[in-house]
Image 1 (cartoon, one colour):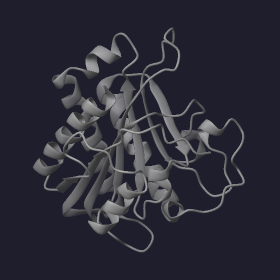
Image 2 (cartoon, helix red, strand yellow):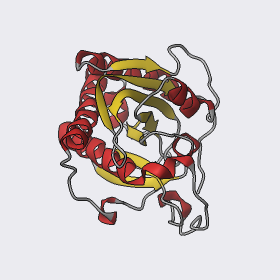
Image 3 (cartoon, one colour):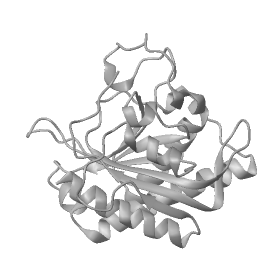
Length: 239
């Protein structure tokens, strides 16, 4: 179910970002499978400026009442991931760690927009070493936009109107990041942005291209590209 609705969400995000003047491409536009390492590779070849992985969550227990939105960014070198239960702090550096500050700020903006516009439970900004985040050479986040397993939230996700609202919130977060970086007015943020709950599941990857590339910060260029892809394989969990 997830692969179907994340692809529909990705297409909606693409449409709304195109209306905002950004170029958008999808990692996949049909029910096909692309290996995890290949996804950030596609974004690199397409000169994307951001990589946004779109997912819907699911609780492992049928009795779970878990709901809400959460956004992941790459765990900084030497730090512990949210889903590692205190382990994983010996991991080395990855290409994605070159953008740790931008990763966190992007995640913060998207999470803020999701919780403000959807009035869903705020599960926070989290950190993980998912393959799609490790290998991204541009700022990257992974979005878990809601729980398909929740009896109410799951039904909402099946609705095209609700997915349009999710897409609108994601676009709002991306454009807020764009404005802040280009104006040099990044908001203050620190480790308290992180929550400490469980890992995400399958989803769709989005990479925006069209971002200014100053030495210390990276922001969206006018006419930029967004890449959306969808993962259909096992959950990508890495400390």
